[in-house]
Length: 465
Ligand code: BGP
Image (cartoon, rainbow, N blue to C red; front, side, top):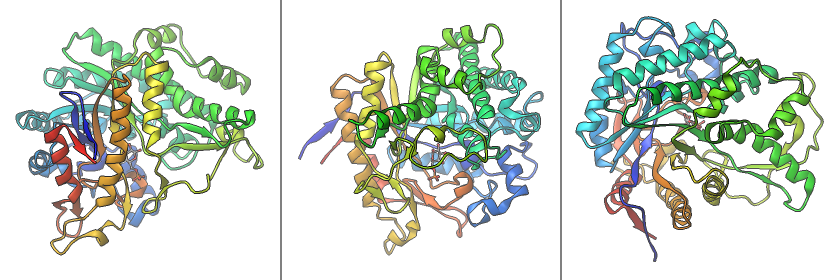
């Protein structure tokens, strides 16, 4: 048995987002986001046709939920401020009911000794902005910065951990490459412009935050997927894995921490003749406004091999023209979600940040195990006996601990997620929470075995295994 003890003050908690938890009340003043719009337009794209209005009702149950967070050992909790709730049209008037709600949530968390971590953009473009092109349109960058400033002004006296985006590569992949987010375009040139504008918007929000001289930190949350080549001795596989890394990790990691895009990525984009529209002064803004703190979401790695399949020309170029995904034989799988489990990936990411990105302070902002049909693991009292999730978290935390021992400045661990929540087109298919939500019983909450276990980890600042 070994005891794993974490640094003093390590943040224990979980992450969620506004659109995935809040729900909608009649006359609450919220404007539509792309998710509300898309669900009305194409409900069949959503698992069981469950849309974003049917979330776990954090809007009305937040006080109960914060008590449950306490019971599960949370010392911190991340959620997001929905842009379309705060500023329903994307620009202009602020919704007073949203201000009251977010103030109440922040105050309630603080009163219960749970540090609020607030993220700004979590895939939830206001529809009014999307109608004008969303992230393709430079005006969205300006509107986003105004929304960010409004948040800092309203809540920055109490919130000291801010994030500009959650997983900004996902709206690029989902909305502009692989058709799993609105507006369902498949167009690499657009994807590159969207990624560029998200990076610029992040730097401009950081600039605005620092100019306000508030006593806090601001960062970005990135889903980092280590790209492992099929054969590390085969140069073609290594090159393919490197290109996947450039497109999906370094396109945000480098500008966020180093203030510049990787030269190799610029060369690829130039070769494709897809250099985005960049205005004078933009690159200096990106250069001069890097993050204070990095959030790392890690679920599974990417396994890559040199391109063997035929290039699909039906949509013009795609990143996949440069590599193939590789189904590594005998890899460990989460059979309940179909994702690989590779715990050492978390260590490899932390080592990379330490060795190649100046060991910037970071924390694990999401890690977790989705399970389809999880109710089958309920005991006679209805409590989910999720020993598999406890195993999953322990095995990842061991690698986080090892990275810390080797000098990585990791400041916390957040599970995805607190309550089972609505997950975009997957709706409630995969359950991730420490706490189960029964949609058939007015979203009744029941703490799972992992939630009780996490309380002991938080109380002891570690665990024995
Ligand atoms: C992460 C997102 C979360 C959540 C999670 C689970 O990438 O940041 O918002 O959706 O994935 O995803 P899924 O339900 O598809 O398994």
